[in-house]
Image (tube, rainbow, N blue to C red):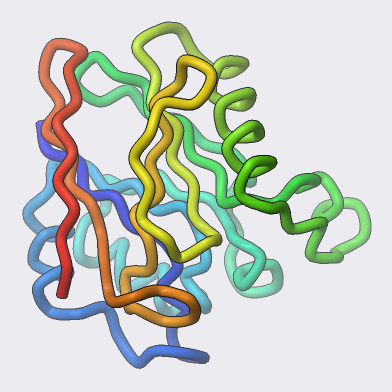
Amino acid sequence: MEVAILSDMHVPEQARVLPDAFRERVRGADHVVHAGDFGSAEALADVRALNPDLTAVYGNADLHDVDLPAVASVDAGGVTFVVVHGIVNPVERAVSGSEGVVMGRDDWLDAIADTTRARADEPLVGVGGHSHEVEDEVHDGVRVLNPGSATGVGRADGATMMTAAVADGDVDVTVHEA
């Protein structure tokens, strides 16, 4: 099974569209995981049109435009992917409509690892976004992925996404650049 993993598009505020090469990867994947910051309801609809097998969460740039959960999970090929953007207190969205508190890298890793452990049985992969920086590391026993920015905006060095080949509980991740 191939899972396309992306985040931080920020369309249309900071970028016009998802790059064509990434559109093809999303279209061809068995499942898509998006860690938030679509940027608009239209950008979310565009990704869904490319591949309706989508597990996604909202990011801080989505708070008023998309209706997605703060945390989502999906089983793919015997691996549970737990997805969260990178907001410390996502409950604030429902209660006050505020953007919550955005965390630093270590807090982000802790939150994704803690959320992942709390949501599923082994094997686990936590997926987050927000920093626009590509990451693939094991943190407190949980593999944590950040695909970077799919459109290359903000602090990103370029447009990036990941694909994960998942089979029998094994995950082989590839970073793609556009």
